[in-house]
Amino acid sequence: MTGIVLAGGRSSRMGRDKSVLPWHNSDLVQTVIRKVGQVCEDIVLVSNQPRNVPPGVRVVGDIIPDMGPLGGIHAGLTHAKSPFAFVTACDMPYIVPEAISFLLQQAGEEWDVVIPSNGDQFEPMFAVYRQTCIPAIETLLKENRRQIIGFFPLIRLKKIDVSRLRQFDKELTMFTNINTAEEYARALQGL
Image (cartoon, rainbow, N blue to C red):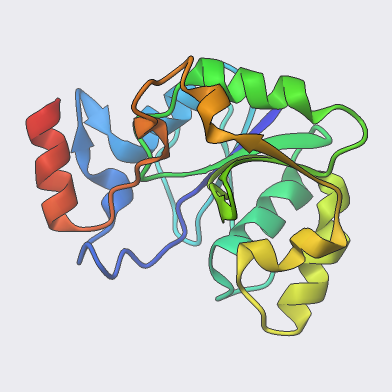
């Protein structure tokens, strides 16, 4: 399986590149790559700037620039070596590899996206996408539509209730991302 880590954002709410913020004995992006790498052999980091990455991790830029996370998913899927890919963001250090494996097991051949949901609330940065999504994503990008869930009506979507993922993380902190300096400070206090 391919793991896609998005690190192309502007980090405007953080005020600096959050991917390189210190985390444990590393930084955020290296932590996320390490955890995703426990499940996925092929890892693609989507970033529009040079990055120091572990051996074997491929860094790719957006194919269609300035389209946010949806553009990053598009680039990652285009460069993925396998038909299915787990997608996450570089600011989600609480990822649980067992939950990634669980989502990948749910994919099967009949689904294009397998995504945790709480009713109509989705976790698009902790989901499995199939390369068959590329045409639907391109349709939105060409219309300058950037909302990830915008292409969901065009594909075969499997929702996984978030309650099923509590077996891996009772508090569901794996869905937490760190966007601001305040969130980062609180997260460091909790380490």
